[in-house]
Length: 421
Image (cartoon, rainbow, N blue to C red; front, side, top):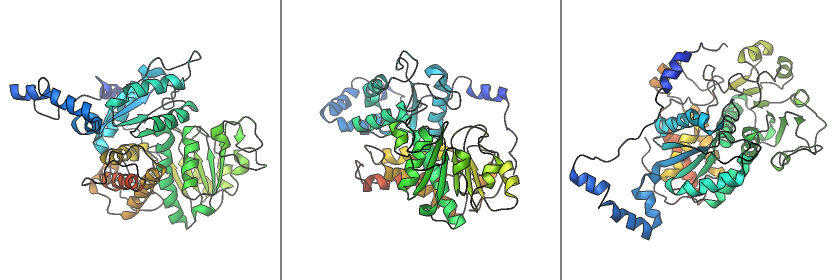
């Protein structure tokens, strides 16, 4: 199992980004005096009055109905860290491109300046205040690249304060895709999720939310490690977010808890999982090594140390099978939420997204366009646990599942579903 060679040069990247990656498109014609009079004055005043009398009409007669703000303060951008809001713009543009290309959602970058404290860290109150002030323009808020633990409080409070969906992709995106892969691993291995021993390495936004999601789906035995070792009840240095997942154990570090484990989930640092640790895992293990760009252990090393034993591996990279890619989640989750005018994104909606992705991977009949894009065949199994981003069926499967879950959970503004195709 070897990685594919890079398909681009540094020069290619800069040329691709030249002038930015986003622009505006007109949804209505502007070719005559009549068009101008309706688009702007005097006709537009009729719509303004209608919205003043009934604010819900903003979701019908403005771009708000399909517009998501991609909001960041630039404090935790990819693997680059605290690079600030200006340097984060290419990433926020990238997220907006994915929203549009994959799900037809209009995303727009909203990098925030002036929301850090004197120490250069996220000021929760300032951040929330700014988002509240701009929120009336948007149908949803996608929080992005905000350092933990501030990101947890920001999402929780904005979710309570706003009547539109709020979703922090770094918390939930990886968790949703990981759960889909875990569900299919259980089918392939014949194991039950309630009987799994799961070890998560990394207790940031992604690691803690992965624990939340897999527990909500039935996993009972889950141990998390951070940079100081096992998150146990004996430790006195835990945040409230970590303490929720503390366990009673004598194990101190990753090498202790990985022994006999069924599943390793890494959202941490390159190379932290050794071949000896993998060899000590239980029969037919799953290794989800998702650190980017270099995973916790390379798939080639796993294959070598397993010596013919059965296993499953996933990474965060596109040059290996089973890429846990957030683009499988956020565009389609917002698509479904916007379609039914949801006021929030519930755990039920997130789990519905995971199950839809897992079911689609098992459904077979992968489109020829996907096979052509990746240069290989796809059949459900150890090298195909989750769909690829270019599978055009994801929108119909996942967005519908999310919309139906919103209706079931009582957060939808309408029970009418669009035609997904």
